[in-house]
Length: 262
Image (tube, rainbow, N blue to C red; front, side, top):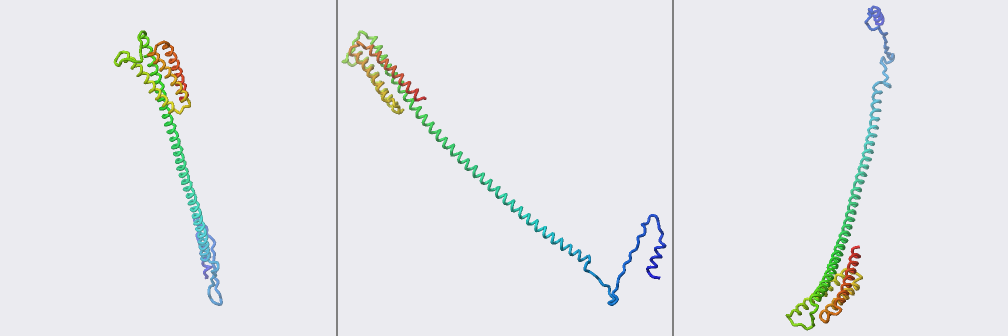
């Protein structure tokens, strides 16, 4: 009995149990032998190994391509990132430079403004100092000439019957009174010099007017002094003229100070 017949008999006698897998049909493989060479011909043209090798080689090529592409992309993105970082750094540097330049310009402008303000402050202080000196000199001149007139008036009213003379004995009462009047009159010239100097210091165009006005007032004061010792007729009239001149001086000084303060 051949092998095939034995297999068929065995298949017929197998017990079919309900839990067993149904019997599957058998497949038979026939191997053909070359009758001339008595060898089994093998065809490896389309073998599994060749396909696997081809697939591996293809996968390697694809992997190399993808790896190269990934490397190029990484390089490209890295380079772009470096360029962006460099641009950002340059931008920050330029902003810092611009900020520093702006700060330097601002400091320079502030320094210039401080210099201007300091110069204006010094100028104001100088002008204020000059104005204060003029005010003080004008007030002193008015005080001295009014004090002189008051002394002459009191002396005249208290010595109506007394005759003063130009020639007086040293040490006498007449000499003492006359010396006091002359001292007050001499003080007017000192006050006049200080007032004219302060007026010139202010660089006012009214210097000549001031000089002329106070000189006229001193002339009237000299006339009052002379009338006291040379005959007191008309003395009170000269005193009134001198007072009017003093009031004109006051008005002029006030006008100059108001103009200076404006």
